[in-house]
Length: 256
Figure 1 (cartoon, rainbow, N blue to C red):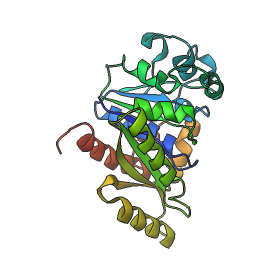
Figure 2: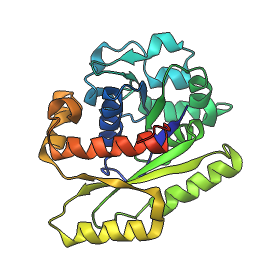
Figure 3: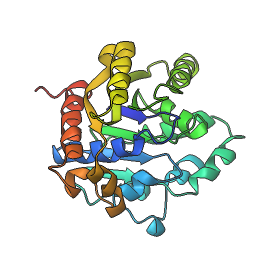
Figure 4: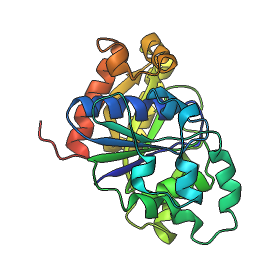
């Protein structure tokens, strides 16, 4: 089963947007998807329409306490999509993990018991701390969103170094599953230049699908809905449909 960490320590690049909307689109296509919210901001949790105030267990409990799979995985209102939710409590886990044994493998040990899904997507925080390290160790590949703006590649080199270190010391099977261009504005030369430079540097690792700047895509989280349900005919929804088709071929071995 593919376990994909969506990671980039630069904030605001579209990690959560990618997790929520790719999960929903794949769910609509008949796949069973689990989203693991490893970001204390918990935007994947709220973006999937989960009420954070009503949660009994969260990813904090996965890392710090022993909880069963049945207790923590929540079915969302969206076809085929479940979530291990987060709250701001997760921010404290980083400090609590610092002095514990095997602190980098807590999430891996939990997810190794999960086998009811076609794909697991882990929404990483915008940092390279223990929460992201746990996510990368638990994953077998990494999806890196890069926004089509100035300083787009800033931080990607550091993430790649971190991935190399994890491969050497903790998880030698970790690979780069793909690079996704986000926040693309076809009206600007800058977006076009950044897209060209990313494709030049990373070649076939870059998905053909590009996620555009789109008002409806920005609005959807405030209603707790993925774009596939909020406005399925919007340019944002169409972009995630294209991405889902590529993901099916790359990660889920679905023939076109």
